[in-house]
Length: 233
Image 1 (tube, rainbow, N blue to C red):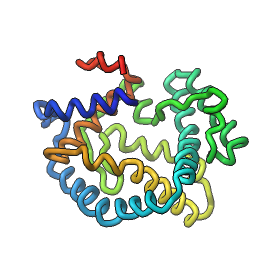
Image 2 (cartoon, rainbow, N blue to C red; image 1 turned 180 degrees about the vertical axis):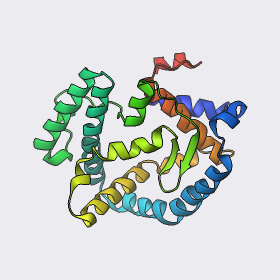
Image 3 (tube, rainbow, N blue to C red; image 1 turned 180 degrees about the horizontal axis):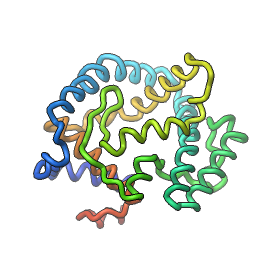
Image 4 (tube, one colour; image 1 turned 120 degrees about the vertical axis):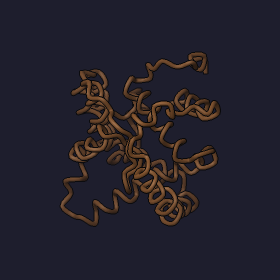
């Protein structure tokens, strides 16, 4: 994870973009920029970010960590299924063990008991990554309203992964809405510091870092880059 962050920052510092392939990577840039304005210059600064700041200021750190653990535990389920579909059976077994242990002994996942037992968490796996492993190309870059950066391949995958979310089968719509809301605010609170890192054309910054990050996670970190010396960190 540290290498991923450092690589992303170095990419930005070097003013690296995919502009030379913009027509192929981002043919819908005009529409994407409209949705970018909606997401990042209207919804986020007016609604989501202020709530995240209040949440971060008023919620004790152990409670915030508990929520992060809880949602991370839920993510073990889609990661398990996608690891199986990708043939990563060892990682799938780790997902299963972590989910069972944290759900039962960790108060529904609020405590990461599995980590204390030596079962370390891994990067989440989603159906978009599974399709990439199966050879499906990513297609054009998309900025989805309300959902943010994606690609033509990854966008429909969000629906598939939602079917693997245990809380999607809760009969109470208010409960599902509250859970999703807390998840969103908790995630946004974790990303408050990223606002100080974004520079230049913010749309291109987010697009390029998103695509680079997707390449990184799909290849499990085995990407060709010029930053191999960062492994020493």
